[in-house]
Length: 276
Image 1 (cartoon, rainbow, N blue to C red):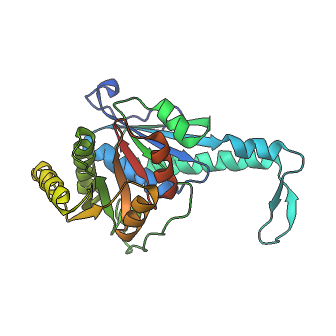
Image 2 (image 1 turned 135 degrees about the vertical axis):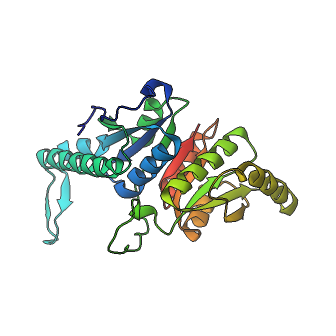
Image 3 (image 1 turned 90 degrees about the vertical axis):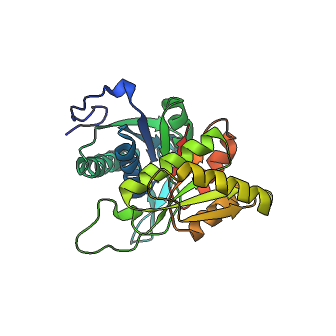
């Protein structure tokens, strides 16, 4: 079993350098299960290498080093000094938990994977780490809806169960790649596929919907719903993703506004998959 920075065995016939790479980026506040399951489903659907990046929060570490830093104890509800050694131990424990969860999820589908640990800001670090051709899955750093409890026999992707893969399709080449990638992932995870269509009105929406339907016609599963969205504001995207019970949001990454993407990652109730 691989450790941080060590690729897992798998013995695939295709060299890793010639294959698509799925980069999943988590930070100290991410909900790990949805991000890892989305990355694993992506890697399985695209026959890709899974490269996980755990980003330790530099601001938290700097805060812990300050002499006046305090934390509120639980369940005592008492203030106590924030000890840098305690923070370091907690980070190591979190990395180990991520490693175990990644290993268990990837092993079910016999996938190659590796885990690297760095320090910084999760989004800036992830974009610096990923190549143009990589697909990036970014973990959220705010609370999200908890998946419904599954049956006694758990599915491979319990965090994605009864949820939908959301693909933004705006008619661009990046939108087409986002749609095809979401479709492949939905097929592996046995999830629904919903297409979000930004349009200025009914007629542009109809045209884009027809183009998306033609692109998706050869794949499985077919889109179950096309959703009109009036704009690409982070709040709008988050509301739609929450209303549609999004498991992951597939976002075209070609030339997009990085500030908008950062806002969407922070606001969306699910992992964001940036498809280059």
